[in-house]
Image (cartoon, rainbow, N blue to C red; front, side):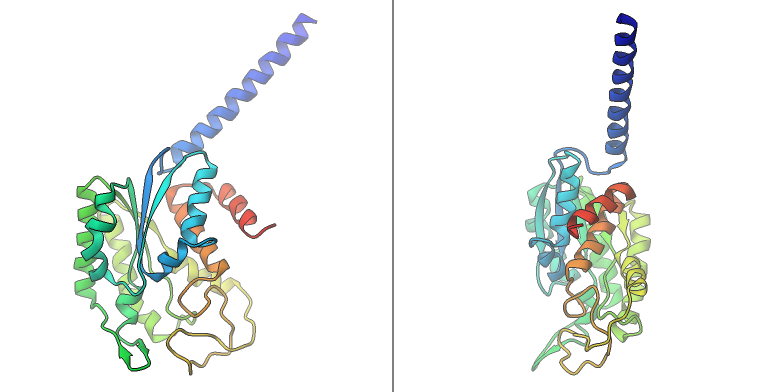
Length: 263
């Protein structure tokens, strides 16, 4: 009897140690550590991402499911470009002393060259100035001991052949280069979005495009409500990319996605 009891006890202890080691290994892979604070800098996509079901909320939910007790600072503002974000970086991010900053910037820098809302026109940010602004934000954050994750810009319209998406290419290429140069994490959401749109079946119907009431495309939007701002599936796509960049395992990302979709 004692022999059987000892064997069972040994097996239970071994199983417990294995589970603890597995959990510890998962935590070690994650770039975000317990109790850390994450600032989400961006434009209206990030501002909307802080609403229920938005990518910011989904990221925090998944991280805290790992027991991290992480907190976040919402720093998305509608219409903002790299120059606007640089101007408010101190107040909205650095002075709040986060451990991390995710930086989602580029859509409006490109889009505002052509966007019109009635008689209202906008001014975009050229690639050279954009590079200076992004570099300055990264360097200022890192100088304040804030770790940075770069998010490549999602599409402006779900048609990859749309002129705005072609103009985004050098901006996103620069983000990939600067992330590597400055040792930042990279969530390549542009790549993720292009790939996911290819996989999703087309549904006939009128596409919606913000600021373009006469936009002609006979495929319904898949990941956005209006060609730019994310719907439920688009927010999930963004959240998965950010979590992957933070080091969460594919198995746990899949489990989180299943939960978000209510499956």
